Image 1 (cartoon, rainbow, N blue to C red):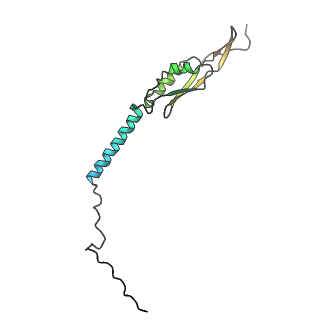
Image 2 (image 1 turned 30 degrees about the vertical axis):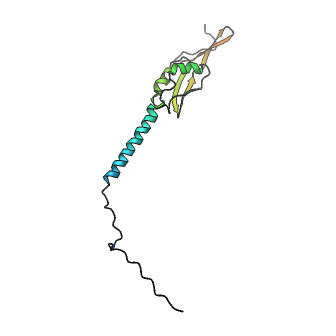
Image 3 (image 1 turned 180 degrees about the vertical axis):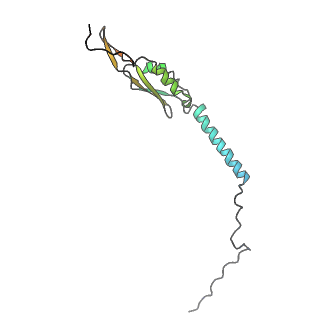
Amino acid sequence: MRRLPAAEPLARPEEPAGGPPQPARGRADPVRAAFFAVLILVILAGAAWAVLGSSLLVVRHVKVTGNQLVSASQVRAVARIRPGQPLARVNTAAAAHRVEQLAAVQSAAVGRSWPDTIVITVVERIPQLAVRARGGWDERPGYEGSAGLRDSPTG
Protein backbone atom coordinates (compact mmCIF):
# COMPACT_ATOMS: atom_id res chain seq x y z
CA MET A 1 0.00 0.00 0.00
CA ARG A 2 1.33 3.31 -1.02
CA ARG A 3 1.19 6.23 1.34
CA LEU A 4 0.33 9.68 0.14
CA PRO A 5 2.45 12.51 1.40
CA ALA A 6 0.86 14.78 4.02
CA ALA A 7 -0.80 17.84 2.58
CA GLU A 8 0.93 21.08 3.24
CA PRO A 9 -1.17 23.97 4.59
CA LEU A 10 -2.13 26.54 2.02
CA ALA A 11 0.10 29.53 2.08
CA ARG A 12 -1.60 32.70 3.34
CA PRO A 13 -0.62 36.22 2.73
CA GLU A 14 1.61 37.68 5.36
CA GLU A 15 -0.34 37.99 8.65
CA PRO A 16 1.00 39.04 11.97
CA ALA A 17 1.44 36.25 14.48
CA GLY A 18 -1.76 37.19 16.41
CA GLY A 19 -4.13 36.65 13.49
CA PRO A 20 -6.02 39.21 11.38
CA PRO A 21 -5.75 42.84 12.43
CA GLN A 22 -8.37 43.97 14.99
CA PRO A 23 -9.83 47.47 15.23
CA ALA A 24 -8.38 49.59 17.99
CA ARG A 25 -10.24 49.11 21.28
CA GLY A 26 -11.55 52.00 23.32
CA ARG A 27 -12.25 54.19 20.31
CA ALA A 28 -15.86 54.24 19.12
CA ASP A 29 -16.69 54.83 15.52
CA PRO A 30 -18.15 58.39 15.53
CA VAL A 31 -20.64 57.60 12.74
CA ARG A 32 -21.93 54.56 14.58
CA ALA A 33 -22.23 56.48 17.86
CA ALA A 34 -24.15 59.30 16.13
CA PHE A 35 -26.47 56.79 14.49
CA PHE A 36 -27.38 55.16 17.81
CA ALA A 37 -27.83 58.53 19.51
CA VAL A 38 -30.26 59.66 16.80
CA LEU A 39 -32.04 56.29 16.94
CA ILE A 40 -32.56 56.61 20.72
CA LEU A 41 -33.88 60.16 20.33
CA VAL A 42 -36.35 59.05 17.64
CA ILE A 43 -37.61 56.18 19.83
CA LEU A 44 -38.05 58.49 22.84
CA ALA A 45 -39.85 61.13 20.76
CA GLY A 46 -42.16 58.49 19.30
CA ALA A 47 -42.97 57.10 22.75
CA ALA A 48 -43.67 60.60 24.13
CA TRP A 49 -45.96 61.36 21.19
CA ALA A 50 -47.83 58.05 21.61
CA VAL A 51 -48.41 58.62 25.34
CA LEU A 52 -49.08 62.37 25.41
CA GLY A 53 -50.27 63.48 22.00
CA SER A 54 -51.74 60.73 19.91
CA SER A 55 -55.20 59.22 19.94
CA LEU A 56 -53.77 55.78 20.69
CA LEU A 57 -53.77 56.02 24.50
CA VAL A 58 -56.78 58.19 25.34
CA VAL A 59 -59.66 57.82 27.79
CA ARG A 60 -62.42 55.78 26.17
CA HIS A 61 -64.01 54.31 29.30
CA VAL A 62 -64.53 55.47 32.91
CA LYS A 63 -65.31 52.51 35.17
CA VAL A 64 -66.80 53.14 38.63
CA THR A 65 -66.59 50.45 41.32
CA GLY A 66 -67.71 50.24 44.95
CA ASN A 67 -70.74 52.49 44.56
CA GLN A 68 -74.23 51.70 45.86
CA LEU A 69 -75.57 54.95 47.32
CA VAL A 70 -74.14 57.16 44.58
CA SER A 71 -74.79 56.39 40.91
CA ALA A 72 -71.93 55.76 38.52
CA SER A 73 -73.10 58.62 36.29
CA GLN A 74 -73.02 60.99 39.27
CA VAL A 75 -69.44 59.91 40.10
CA ARG A 76 -68.37 60.35 36.45
CA ALA A 77 -69.93 63.82 36.29
CA VAL A 78 -68.20 64.99 39.47
CA ALA A 79 -64.84 63.47 38.45
CA ARG A 80 -64.88 65.55 35.21
CA ILE A 81 -62.73 63.18 33.16
CA ARG A 82 -63.24 63.90 29.46
CA PRO A 83 -63.34 61.05 26.95
CA GLY A 84 -60.59 61.54 24.38
CA GLN A 85 -58.17 63.07 26.90
CA PRO A 86 -54.70 61.44 26.84
CA LEU A 87 -54.57 58.90 29.66
CA ALA A 88 -51.20 60.17 30.89
CA ARG A 89 -52.55 63.71 31.28
CA VAL A 90 -55.46 62.79 33.58
CA ASN A 91 -54.90 64.32 37.02
CA THR A 92 -55.99 61.33 39.09
CA ALA A 93 -55.45 63.04 42.46
CA ALA A 94 -57.67 65.99 41.53
CA ALA A 95 -60.40 63.69 40.19
CA ALA A 96 -60.31 61.62 43.40
CA HIS A 97 -60.57 64.81 45.48
CA ARG A 98 -63.61 65.96 43.49
CA VAL A 99 -65.35 62.59 43.97
CA GLU A 100 -64.63 62.69 47.70
CA GLN A 101 -66.67 65.91 47.90
CA LEU A 102 -69.86 63.87 47.42
CA ALA A 103 -71.63 63.50 50.78
CA ALA A 104 -72.02 59.73 50.53
CA VAL A 105 -68.37 59.11 49.60
CA GLN A 106 -65.82 58.50 52.34
CA SER A 107 -62.84 58.07 50.02
CA ALA A 108 -62.08 57.61 46.35
CA ALA A 109 -59.12 56.33 44.36
CA VAL A 110 -58.62 57.04 40.67
CA GLY A 111 -56.25 54.95 38.58
CA ARG A 112 -55.33 54.23 34.98
CA SER A 113 -55.95 50.90 33.29
CA TRP A 114 -53.93 51.06 30.08
CA PRO A 115 -54.61 51.44 27.22
CA ASP A 116 -57.94 53.29 27.49
CA THR A 117 -59.71 53.12 30.86
CA ILE A 118 -59.88 55.21 34.03
CA VAL A 119 -61.01 53.26 37.11
CA ILE A 120 -62.66 55.16 39.97
CA THR A 121 -62.92 53.09 43.15
CA VAL A 122 -65.36 54.53 45.70
CA VAL A 123 -65.64 53.72 49.40
CA GLU A 124 -68.99 54.96 50.57
CA ARG A 125 -69.92 56.08 54.06
CA ILE A 126 -71.97 53.61 56.07
CA PRO A 127 -75.47 54.93 56.75
CA GLN A 128 -75.88 55.79 60.44
CA LEU A 129 -79.43 57.10 60.36
CA ALA A 130 -82.61 56.13 58.56
CA VAL A 131 -85.37 58.71 58.27
CA ARG A 132 -88.90 57.74 57.32
CA ALA A 133 -89.69 59.19 53.91
CA ARG A 134 -92.47 58.72 51.44
CA GLY A 135 -92.39 55.22 50.10
CA GLY A 136 -89.67 53.93 52.45
CA TRP A 137 -86.59 55.04 54.29
CA ASP A 138 -84.01 57.69 53.48
CA GLU A 139 -80.58 56.59 54.67
CA ARG A 140 -78.20 59.26 55.90
CA PRO A 141 -74.49 58.49 55.81
CA GLY A 142 -72.38 58.89 58.95
CA TYR A 143 -69.61 61.45 59.16
CA GLU A 144 -66.36 61.41 61.08
CA GLY A 145 -66.61 63.42 64.25
CA SER A 146 -70.38 63.09 64.51
CA ALA A 147 -71.82 62.69 67.97
CA GLY A 148 -73.51 59.42 67.05
CA LEU A 149 -76.98 58.18 67.91
CA ARG A 150 -78.35 56.60 71.03
CA ASP A 151 -80.67 53.65 71.09
CA SER A 152 -83.17 55.42 73.32
CA PRO A 153 -83.68 59.08 74.10
CA THR A 154 -82.63 60.29 77.50
CA GLY A 155 -84.90 62.59 79.30
